Length: 197
Image 1 (cartoon, rainbow, N blue to C red):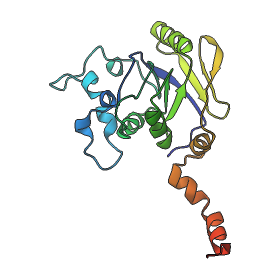
Image 2 (image 1 turned 90 degrees about the vertical axis):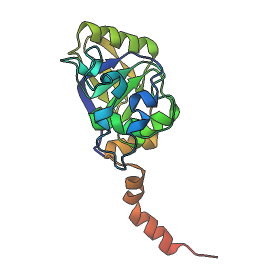
Image 3 (image 1 turned 60 degrees about the vertical axis):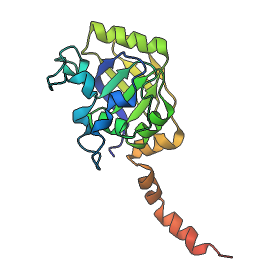
Image 4 (image 1 turned 180 degrees about the horizontal axis):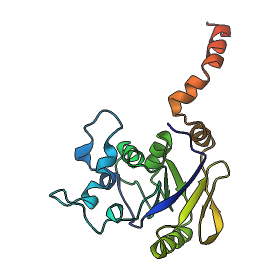
């Protein structure tokens, strides 16, 4: 995974609430055995018509709307526990997803796969949607070391919480296996001095 420290980018607003994992990546696309390629079918049923044509009104199909930060409505990632939802968002190019509330399993899946889930107050999120509606080219900055989110045109930044271990892993670009391997020498040293009964 790529380390995350500070992400500065334009944003993609998705104000829909209760977006479940089947809307993020429909079940019929879960047959692959690797993480690559899921981004092509991110929000597939919203993004494309039944005959495969892009739906003009959907945000990812609108010209000039792009970025590595997704601003979403509350209760994002509800539904089934499929890890593929985080894979699809990451594979599409998102580094950060912002919402006022995440389903716990989705949030953990995101953090385990290098996708930063940032939870901010609902009132602040609504201000972001209004600002982006007026000017889609506004840039936001997500600073993981200081746990601060800020956006052009909004004076005060917002703080966010994150699990200390997951923060450390994201800063180093580690998944849980990488984290364990980074302590391989300490583990070997402990095993060498450990007595068995």
